[in-house]
Length: 95
Length: 93
Length: 207
Picture 1: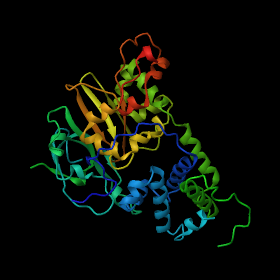
Picture 2: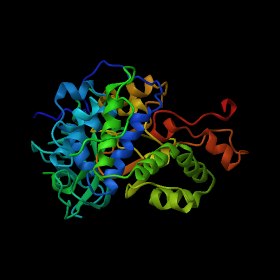
Picture 3: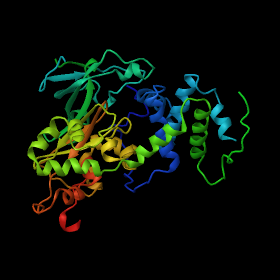
Picture 4: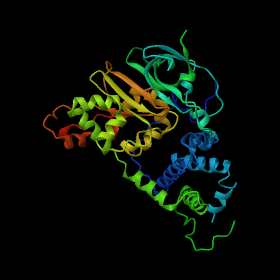
């Protein structure tokens, strides 16, 4: 039975666990805060956030950092809901 | 809440296409109820903007690791504990 | 949509990751559209950066000293946190798992990164990593060995995969030689990793 890319339990891997500490960057804290604020406003719940993350193409999911996945999901869900226009975030990020 | 602590239960082997919180490594597996949690809104429908009602009972279910991954050690000290919603559980036959 | 007519910082100075640019762009758009206000984003940031493992450590230290509190903590960790004036966070249920001489708990979220953030602060990067999420359930003793912890073959190692609304917090075992310590001194021994279950608390001679 195929599993979603996020469904990692028991997968065989030789990768060591990188135990180094990473202080969150400002943009990561901002991303987290945006999700929290949207949730408190009832604009996007945590299950929608997770669904958005799980919709990432497999290779993108695996390569993306944790908060890059959150950004992907927010854009995806907010575009789905019509809060963002398609490509709007790309255009704004490009300046 | 249908199940009680100690009861054996089997996880449905469903290929659920949308968002769901039952990890594939326990699908089709038989475990044991360890805790009866409260009922919570269904993440499978909340994930699509629904209110997630009615709330679904949630249980902590334990599995023998050697049932899940046969090459790993067996025995009572080798179990995995997973929170599973009631609608994914059946009485173990 | 009208053009924004104010000067703004260029979106990228070439040194920042694209994701940083994107996050700020998203923030800007959401504020412009009236979806969010700058103040609530700020408040969210302030809350996040205020979260540290110290709150979880206080729960553990109090449980070590007070058997009745420990009983209440095991019955309802959320209520026990509120009792100490701590913020248990938005999660409706927090469950404390007690380590003993014969039982050791280890927590993972194989599907994402569920974690008791209000009481422990942000999860460490390794907790969110793909290898931890894969191996914690299938090879926990191997994972513990990577963390330098050998709990003994006769100990019941319970790996808990937090897949739903419950957030789990491990109450590690009180180290020996700590009978004389105050509650504050005990709390200082309780590390984040010991409350996840991949380490023991600091021994007092090393603290």
